[in-house]
Amino acid sequence: MKFLAPLLLAFTASAAFAHGNVSCPVVPKEEKKPQMELQKKLEGEGWKVRKVQNYNGCYEVYGFDDKGAKAEAFFHPKTFERVYPEGEQPADKK
Image (cartoon, rainbow, N blue to C red):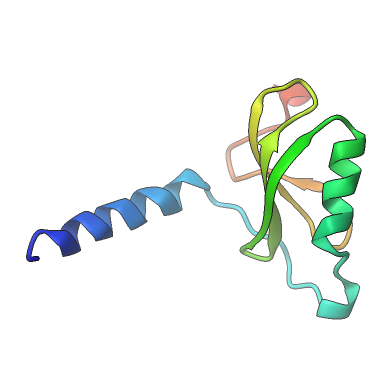
């Protein structure tokens, strides 16, 4: 039992760093578009969406992008504009 706490702490810390530094500005609830709308939009663009959830004020999407690559992406909940973690750039800007 003594060894479980440090293991859980290490796992939690590594999971948090997987996201990088990403956040969206606070948007009033009534201004947020539904997550299902984002999912339909992305699927219309060729994505295969497995899961959409809230993360630091953004919508976090897990699935496969329009090129079939595994994706974890963040989107602004009001505009659906893609938000990139600090230090990460869009593929077309690299």
